[in-house]
Amino acid sequence: MKRIIYLLPLALFFVLVGYFLISLRPGHDTHELPSAMLEKPAPSFELADLGDDNRLALTGLKGHPVIVNFFASWCVPCRIEHPLLMRLSQQDHLPLYGIAYKDKPDDAARLLATYGNPFRQVGLDQDGRVGLDFGVYGVPETYVIDANGIIRKRFVGPLTAEAVERDLMPLLKQLEPSS
Amino acid sequence: MRKFVLCLVLLLGALPAGGVEPKERLADPALEARARTISGELRCLVCQNESIDESGADLAHDIRILVRERLTAGDTDAQTIQAVVNRYGAFVLLKPPVEPATYVLWFGPPALVLLGLAATGMWLHRRQAAPTDTAPLSPDESRRLAGLLRDNEG
Image (cartoon, rainbow over all chains, first blue to last red):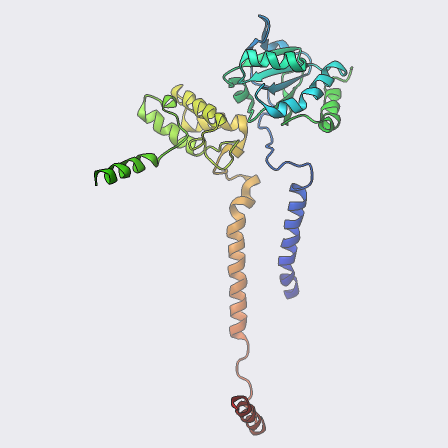
C-alpha cells in the first residue's frame, strides 16, 4: 500500500504527458477557439451587396446549405486560401458566399477582380457588426450554415485542402444527401 | 526647478494609457463606470491575455462598443456579459465560471496543496514516531570511536 503512494508522482507525470501529447499533437492549434455559435441559429443579417443593388441576407440563404466566408482585402491569409476557394466554386460548384469584413467596397472589388470571384454573392460588413454577431475574431473565417440556418461548422484561418477533404466535404454531403 | 515639476507632471499624465478611446465613452458616468468594470472582465480574443478595456485591438474596440450599446439599451451587467459570451464562448471571461468543466481548474491547485500538506504531515509524524533510543555503545565501540576521532584530528 505504501509503495503505491510513492508511485503517485510518477502516475501524475504520465497524466501530464498524456495531456500534452493530446493538446500539442501536430496540426492542432492551441490558439484556435471552439465556436460558441456551433449548432445555434446563425445571427440574422442583411448586408449591402458588393457590385449590385441586391442585398445579402440570411433569409435569402435558407433552404439549402451554404458556406459563408469572412474575408478582407487587407488580410494576408485570405490570399493564401483564395485559390482553394476558386477551385471549390469552379470545380465543385459549392455555394460560397462572401462577407467582406471591415473592408472598403473598392478594395474588396479590386481583390475579386484581380484574383477572381469565387462567391455567388458578396455582402459588405464595413463596421464588422455581422462579424461580431458571428463571433469572428480574425479573418478569414468560414462557416457552414445548413438549410435551416443553423451554424454547423466553423473554420478559423485559411481553409486548407486537407480540412476541405476531411471536414467540409463530408459535412456538405451529410447536409445535402441528394447531391 | 520649474522644468523638473513640468517633467513630473507630464510623466504622471502619461501613466494611465488604456485602450478606451475618448469617443467610445458614454455620456452617463454611471453607465460608463459599469461598462469599464465589465470590460475589465472580458478577454480580448486577439491578444488573449489583455482585457478588452486595456487592449488597443480592433476587435476589443468592437466588443467595448457592443457592451456600451447593451448597457445603454437597459441591459443588466449579467445580460451584457451573457451577450458577449453567447458570441465568443466562456473563454472571453478572464475569470472562468465555476462549472463541472472547470472544477479541475478551480479545485485542482488547492487539492494538490492539501495533498502535499497531508504527505508532509504523514512524513513528519512517522519520523517522530521512529525509535530514537538505540543501545549505548559498548566499551569496545567507544574505544574505536575515540581512536577514529583522534586519527581524524591528526
